[in-house]
Length: 161
Image 1 (cartoon, helix red, strand yellow):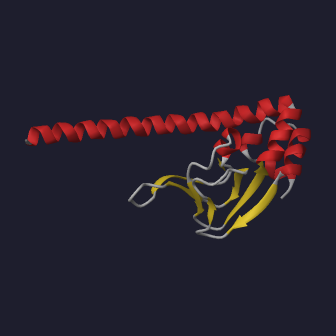
Image 2 (tube, rainbow, N blue to C red; image 1 turned 90 degrees about the vertical axis):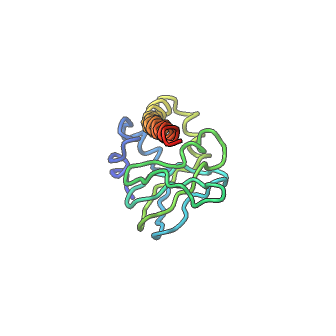
Image 3 (cartoon, rainbow, N blue to C red; image 1 turned 30 degrees about the horizontal axis):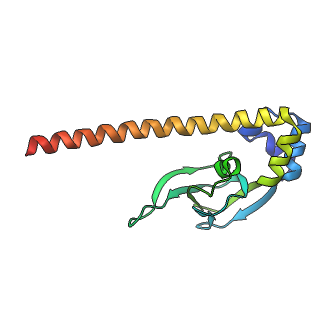
């Protein structure tokens, strides 16, 4: 992995060369074979992951049911970010759908860097907040659609009775 790769990833697009170098020094790459469980729901979060190549599936455990697929993510997508910032366990499982190369930025190193370089922290966190905001907007749309479907089913059931 080289620093040029970082320039292609949207959460780093506002960073200058010096800031990218600081991130690069923290980052490690890891290759996950297809169907490998990368993150396990309920386990302690330890890193921010950026998909360099490949695809992952994000699922949520459903009591007494098959895991619910939340989404799939491809190159330049991030995951593990919530646990990186709220220090809570991972909220979902993430599994490689195909051979997937990820860049891992360890939570401890990222915390130290963000404390030392406030401008870098602002730029990076602004990009991460943008990603999280878009995900929340998508979730809101899905919730509205699900609620409308539920209301329609209930109306149809009342008509049938």
